Amino acid sequence: MSTLSEAYKDQPLHLKHIIPLDFASVGSLMPDSHVWPGSGDFPPSEEEYNRSSVPVIDLRDPNASEHIRRACEAWGVFQLINHGISPILIEEVEHEAERFFALPAQQKLKALRSPGGATGYGVARITPFFSKHMWHEGFTIMGSPLDHAREVWPHDHQRFCNAMERYQKEMKTLAERIIRLIFRSLSINSEEEISWLGSSCNVSTALQLNSYPSCPDPNQAMGLGPHTDTFLLTILHQSQTINGLQISRDGVGWLPISPLPGALFVNMGDLFHLISNARFSNVLHRVVVNGTRQRFSVAYFYGPPTEFVVSPLCKGLNSGQVPLYRSVAVKDYVSLKAKHMENALSVIRID
Image (cartoon, rainbow, N blue to C red; front, side, top):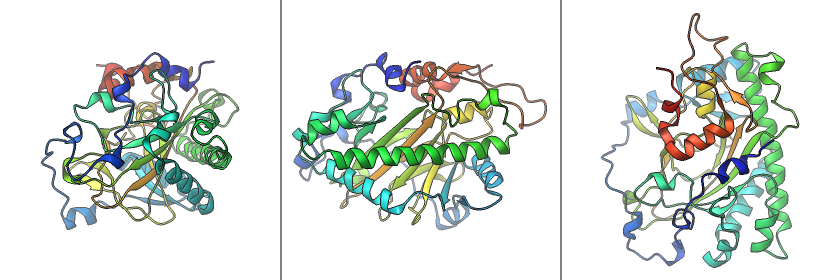
């Protein structure tokens, strides 16, 4: 069975789309390579913002399954509280991420992602789809980060590895709990349909550490360009004191997602949009940057095994609804996304 890392090997990137800017060397002027044209966006009014409050769901609520389904339909995102992830573990992971990103550029480059690789240090994989570079650096982990971590810290890598491996284990359990609740709300529960969920098989997961350094002119920069996520869902921890994440909301525009103390932010990806036959929104989102403070986030991505064929499951959906998308193997959709980005779903859309 192929792995997620292998699925990315067929879509190698040029080094210019991997190596981040040395942000510590940037003075008061923005490099032209990172100056984004004015988007013409205006922040939502206070009235619009108040009408656009992202759902907050308590995982201990007996009706959590139904609340999550409604949030997925109306928003494609929600804030999750009482999720069971230790705040001490979250703090430890954020501390280790900060420790890595605080290193000199040359030391971080020892963990550089290879052109055909999926893990290691580098900029976002969506970089080639934009004419300007993003004010961002990241570290992608799939399983153990040992090989990259010991290149960076030959004698002090174990605490970084331990924190990331424990966090991935906890996130996998949480992701599968959320997915089971969603499937239950859609009356999807046959063993054939969810046989991969919670098993020891090679599900598609990745942990992404993100750093958005302070920027001399944040109005001309973009932390991450607008995009949707590829897999079933993403579970995000973001710095508790700095805004940056924004979602696109019809009638509102770009809506800032303020961190909620103790909450994790969950958003649906392309594959849940496909499985739900477009009932769940794969919300478009982006990240803006701050003029004085560095911002960190930790994203966990979860999807079925790469060989698994994903299809619209019309059971539990509107009566008589026909499939809107063709079936596709996860690894093939990863390739489509790498080639077509936001047009990937259009390629498999049934006219």
